Length: 194
Image 1 (cartoon, helix red, strand yellow):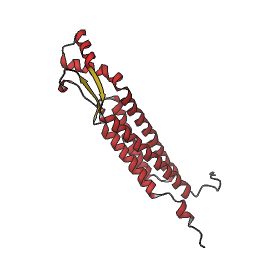
Image 2 (tube, one colour):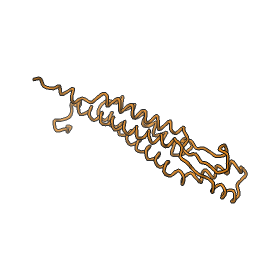
Image 3 (cartoon, rainbow, N blue to C red):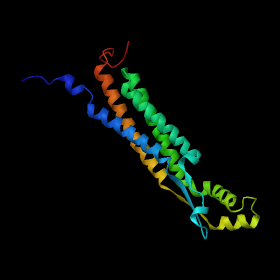
Image 4 (tube, rainbow, N blue to C red):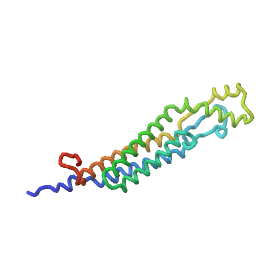
């Protein structure tokens, strides 16, 4: 009987590396691309849609945060792919995981709190369109009664991108940890370093 090749069984899977890379990269692109879509779509009863403002992700602080984090995730994914050594691979993977959690949180907050957070802005912007010289208190009250704020597709896609990037970050971290433990000659048998 021959002994199994320990090197082959302990080396990290190249599929795990590729899956982590693709998942994180696609998730970051999805989250970043979602900022170019509608995040807030208000409707105002008896007003034509062209008089109702629409808010893209890049028009809102939430969308700008997600866009910035998507860029951070893409850079971290590329650095983890090119990194050498344990820190050069695990550090960027942790950055991907943390940034993905923030993308998920910001997108989720935009979905849950859209009506309460953006309704006053929608009213102000609508009145600026309808009465550029200034609105009366009665006009403001009338518009406030008929405003309904709906969440567009943008935050939902951003949330999905964050979840996908999170999965990619976790896979990349698992791969980097396995790669460093399989190939780190400095480790003592008990796992400690000198």
